[in-house]
Image (cartoon, rainbow, N blue to C red; front, side):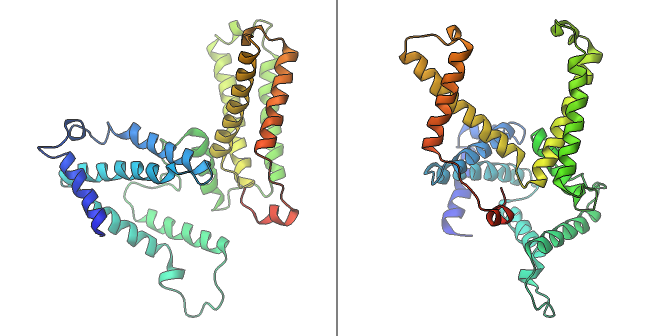
Length: 294
């Protein structure tokens, strides 16, 4: 390992040592879970800002979490960070035979789709030799955000042929699920809040709403869109627009809760125009649409 990496590992060990930091020393795998998730999301935030100077620092914060978990495991005699790196190297080499053990009879380089199929076949072979993992879906983490987990599950089953044939079929399925949800909503009385207190009604709505979201995640997969990223960006756009409206309302000496519907609409359109000027949408040619992973 490099000198700087070795030094970092030593710093982590010292922080958790007898004369180290009491806070670091008392941490466990369980107590650090929320920090790991938080640092991962901060890396995502930095990645979404073009040429963000924060990315370097956020990657370091994420690396800290990895090293802390490895140090805790080492203290328990389970494994070290060197074991983590060794296993990763072995896995990368094993799953990239076209790079590290190329077939001399293969004259043409593999296409990305063929590489993806090869990767999945190798992973499936590995799963068959892993105790306790009996299903194709066992390796999808339970703790993933629900929308992303739905995406990953459908992605996995599609690789063994359980899939729709075209995006249009998924759109039709989405319309079907929305229609089922619409029927339940339309059956609610005028004061729907009372009926929603009924467990049966609430469970029915939750079930149909879940089916809609699950189908949306599948449509996202067909369109090569990460649903978590798409929703995160849409939420960010909404936040930016709403904050723009807040600023204008304050400047006008008004209060948000006094605005009329037409005032809200005018401000919203103004916010969208401002956004379009600051961040023009990228327009793809048909050829680019066919080759770009959205």
